[in-house]
View 1 (cartoon, rainbow, N blue to C red):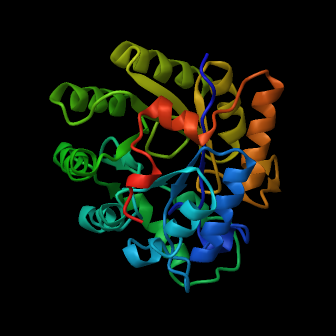
View 2 (cartoon, rainbow, N blue to C red):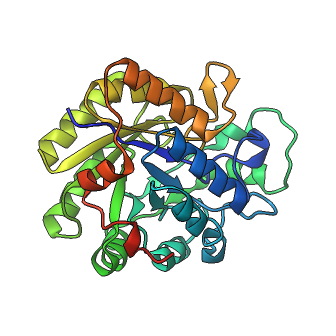
Length: 308
């Protein structure tokens, strides 16, 4: 069994500022949260940007460049920049920051899908900003777009042009087959870092039988040509990551995926979640990968070849 890579998704584009005071919003907060998560044991830091005044997801490369160099200069973690951006962004907007940054790794959603997070708007709360509740409620009519043409474009512009490798985000079984198609067509090359995702409305459910099925399907499609990782939304985060570790997989935590550290208890930071899953895995006699080891496992180009 290889050492386990812990990824940490720092802020994302799903949760809004009114949901948690711990959610990093400003460039300084995102940088500090990333550095702390790396110190707690995360080998990969998965990053979105926020408008520092309102907390709304932004594709602006200038905002990304206010925290990417700070993180790079302060820790050795692999920096992973989203190509998913935010729910209302065009493909071109979503690519603006990655093309400017030329990072070692980017996330890449493996298909168009319904992406419904409207349930988060139902809970009574004092909304800090006018955009938050409509943003969430509007996802009942939202399709996140990534066609095969989009995927080929992204892999050409980032992968083939700049040596960026990908966290292939697979929200359902069909996404694994989409990735197999892309591998067959030569859009991507192994080792594939396959992030199987559970519990998003519009994707596969957070049931342990689905965890097994996604793993078995990936084994069938990719054999030894992939590195498997797991994330699960909300209350399923820690138990799914624990099971993934036992099964020989890698894990992703962070406030993008869950705002909680335990049942009914809000997390105080990304680092708190990283420290918890690291402790759980080490208590199971599993070893945690360093950033250097993660780079070797995923065949990354190295932090000296990025654009920031």
